[in-house]
Length: 365
Image 1 (cartoon, rainbow, N blue to C red):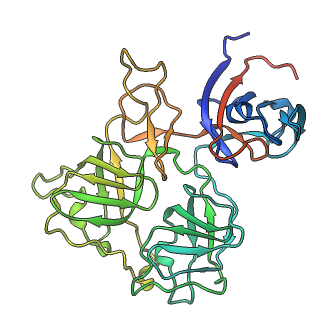
Image 2 (image 1 turned 120 degrees about the vertical axis):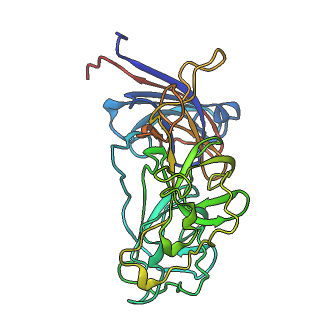
Image 3 (image 1 turned 90 degrees about the horizontal axis):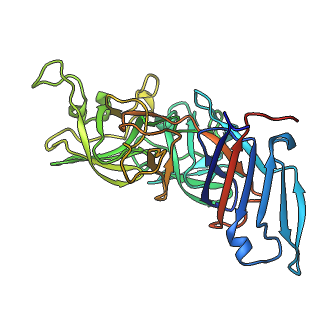
């Protein structure tokens, strides 16, 4: 039967560990060819992998090379293939105690065996060293991890080397970090602002990937204590009642864009917020605007049948959403789903993996 079955195929580069594959459905059968492992047989290489939902989450049957190397078969019950569905609200990983954090730009956090990697998005809680000192000014904002020093240290980009910030030490009570498991349920969505450079155009640096593309329209929501309130979309002093919007003219990287607003003479941006201001502190935001709230790129004579919009991630990679063709808008539905290639079978970093995924309309377990 195939009336309601879904099929997908593609290629992905292994991370060397957990490697997610986004699809417009949750599969019940997956098969993978590790082209790199097959092309160069070596002990431990796993060129062929299969998984069926009836095995259970995390299972997989695979073929592997022994020391000779000769191909043989094996089974894993952990870190094989598993499926995921992000849901309609943000989900988080386990809270982890923060041991310490540097008063520096950028800030380096000490968390024992954090398990994070570059590109993960995290949110902090607490961050008080005492009742009047610490870094609670950034608690509640999403940050992308820009560097991992070792198993116990990671970096986020924020200027903590300012007068109102104090280093953390000694595992302060209530200081935690947690991973946002599927941070981009809607794209581009809302971004939190790390820095603003004013001038004939305006450069915005965000705390996590902004997911914007050239030509998209944006608005700003900046509380007065952060400065640069002249960017705010309301009110427009020239046309009362009409919002002030800007257009993205350059995407510098995953966290930096240039918009066509002439901000010469605007108030300087101020990220040096006081600890005393934290109760009730609101964060500065850049918001995508538009009149289409779902979909991808327009269909043309040369486009693929189902072209999803893609968005720039930290490190330069582009990540597709699950959407089909339409005009790109302010909020693209990106409720992530698909399957995860676990560390037992993912191979080495940068291994080329070809996959086929199926969702059958009939199953007889």
